[in-house]
Length: 194
Image 1: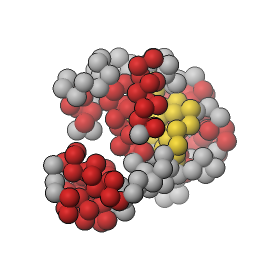
Image 2: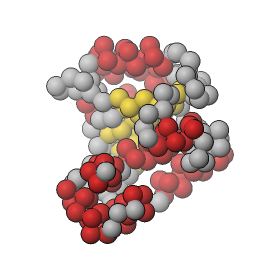
Image 3: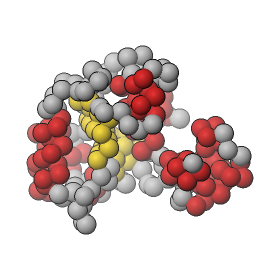
């Protein structure tokens, strides 16, 4: 709730950072939060939930919201990061800005990080970067120092099940089973129920 309020205030006041680092254990739902934040940033009305931007963002197929995960067996490949950097300099397709959600930045090695630092420090004005990592300590200091860090906590299973019931309309027993099966991740549990 604190994180939600912080992100809402950021949107309302327009004091937007160009780079965020969401940290938290699996099951802290930082990925869902990143998508919700991206949706609010893309929507002309800060996440009205009804416009085409919001609907596409909710379905996770908006052309200006990019989810990036490591392609290498041990993390990010330098070429993969170079592609992201090149793409970030292209204009948005539909919205007025582009959002990159970059998962597992704790798997960003020094070479890949170096390819990314200049863009992370000064991305194009219409780009917002949301990085996801397990802990602040597991992410390279050169990355952390260029981001606004937003810490997430693990959500207790009972609370997660309640959120899942609200979001999917399933029953509480179904939600509890799905949360248990998906290691506490609301996002994965919602997909599991579908």
